[in-house]
Amino acid sequence: MLGLLGDEWTLLVLQQALMGATRYGDFQSRLPISHSVLSSRLRSLADDELLERRVYQTNPPRSEYLTTARSRSLWPMLVSIWNWERLWVPDHSDALPLMRHTVCNEDFVPLVTCGSCGESVREKDVLAQWGPSGSWARSIPAAVTRRRSATSQAGLFPQTMTVLGNRWAFAILVAAFVGVSRFTDFQTQLNAPPGSIADRLAIFVANGVLVATDNRYRLTEKGRALFPVLISALQWAQRWFPAPEGVAVMLTHTGCGRRFAALLTCNECTRPLRGTEVSAI
Ligand SMILES: [Zn+2]
Ligand SMILES: [Zn+2]
Image 1 (cartoon, rainbow, N blue to C red):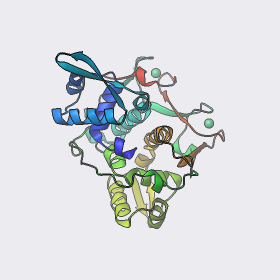
Image 2: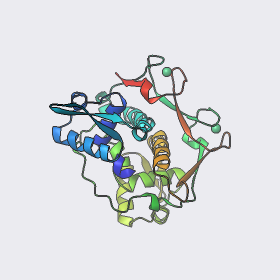
Image 3: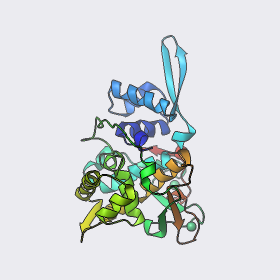
């Protein structure tokens, strides 16, 4: 899961595909992407069944890339990333266009609501507990070789990549949401090398996602605002890559006492958002 998503260009290509880009030229005109990077990402997205390659012309050969059920169900995470970067990474907010809900025709902000009771939900309303598949250690790929994103310095989602672009970063954040705060507890719960935990915690503190006080690491407001991103990434991973022993993280909406499944709604018209009804302007 992290291997698929921990790459900025992969997220951007997917996002454009979900917004209707299908042909090579569509992606190239919408993204500041080089030929080789675009070709390699389209190929790996097709290999991972996030895009389906279909030849639409044989002479000369031309292919288009269509979204799949697996990638279409990623749109809540991409919308949440978009919104978080706009709100919390102000020095680059100009780089991201507004999002429009085509149903009400307003520029919108996604709100997280409980799929069971329909109430609007903040991170403090959700109880997160480790599920039967135990700690995150088993959910994390054992060895991921990760090339640095070509745009890691000046990309469109620069800070999101510090959250998703490392095998431990996402797990540390989930642990922080579950309530882990001490260095040794992160290390034990995640079964991670101390050096990796220390590196990631330092980066999160430098980015203002965590704050360190009294030997504890706690989420800041900016960190808590990642809740929709984490929830939608978790739900996607647990849907498409289920662990045989059960979910890694169990979520309960404390307001209604039922299992929490996030549903994104439009802040302007309150209707549930659908991936096909969101556009960039
Ligand atoms: Zn509820
Ligand atoms: Zn709306």
